[in-house]
Length: 312
Length: 291
Image 1: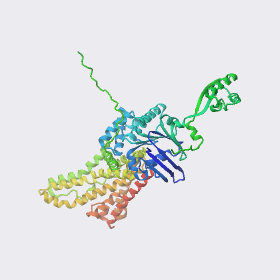
Image 2 (image 1 turned 120 degrees about the horizontal axis):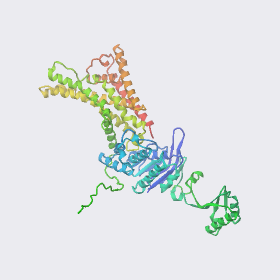
Image 3 (image 1 turned 180 degrees about the vertical axis):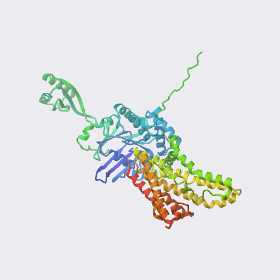
Image 4 (image 1 turned 30 degrees about the vertical axis):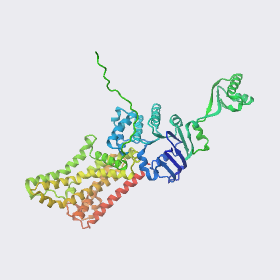
């Protein structure tokens, strides 16, 4: 079931900038990576879906509600963690998150209970009674996540949640997001320009560029094998490629690597391995590593071609 | 033999719990903002220092009523220290101080620290947020513009021998007491928050509020004495007293409207314009902010 649908969604800002350009995509359950470079339209899409920004053209629904007319119903059932700092410094995390729970519509008692629960889930303990102004960046990110989660939303929108975090903080935050999606059963839409992070947590990917859909598919299909073997050598790899080509195997050298087309050998991948080994020995060339080349997420943005069936 | 070791302090991770209780939606959200705003206005849940100005103002505002009732009890009807018409005008100096100290608390930090997107991504509209903040400050201001006058009313009624007769005598002032108190609270909180919403820091906001009221008051007082009645319109408090006199009658010694040649309805019109301009400023300001 699609929780979020857009149809030819378009947003043009008064200055003439087109942030979204006819975006059509269905988003289902799970952890969804919304990837694209800075300025690709990720934040604009989230704001339109929250009903905070009117679209110029096209339609959208979130949980079957229309953001343009039923924004309040949507905002009751979704959580939003903005990219930027958004916390008042002179109040404790407990007080702030409980207040935000009530503004989400929870009664006072439930707001207090859920605040305690959620702060524990994001890993804030004794320090939750201290003023937020004294928190580290990592702790502030946890409070931002907690306020988005406190009213038990069906869908969580996280805009660049690892911004400003050190590597350990990043790991923690990604672990938390994964847990929210898997254990809490909440659909998480994570907007990020860091493909490496998205790769670790998302089950499904929506890639946008210049406000257009580049591709939407399960993460695995973005990174499947390409049928190519990558051979890295210690010195110039040109001679190796030539000798392999002499054997009837398609091989292209690029500096100290050779890309070999496994299928072109005809008699299976082991024959290709043997050929590489034999020719390297003959050339007295040290092979550093051999691996199956996989599609990389970055490839998406290198050649901007919308794959067939992109709107599935 | 030895007893079983007691298991104390065991923490069970019960995992994530979903919430299927009631969701109060927009109404609950607005109520929560008004409630939190009222706590901020009176310094509840904050340090003792932040209670000094609001509570000091509330006590000082009630003092004349307490004194007047005490005098009446001791000396009888011979001396009427304070009447309903002039009460709010006479304690008027407390209002800018109260607003300057408490209004910035309500709006400045949410803008400065960019908390607004968190509010607007919840089941409210922008206008709900602004209206809730105005309501919080206005209800707070009633502690100065309404409560002391009600206290005076109750004191005057209770200090007589014939309660029923006293109520009959005094009840005619009730529309003025409530009407004037509410108009003051709504107009002043709107002006105060409009000014604060434009300031980047709480201290600037407080300064700007004081400047507008004090400069307006000084100009109004000094020019009105020279017969230049129009000057009263730069002072919100003078405008509001004129509005009171227009609606309920009763000139107040020292207030510009009392000696003015201008039609009193102009003060009412000026009060209306002040409110509408303040709301327009707030609407534009909050539309620009965020998203």
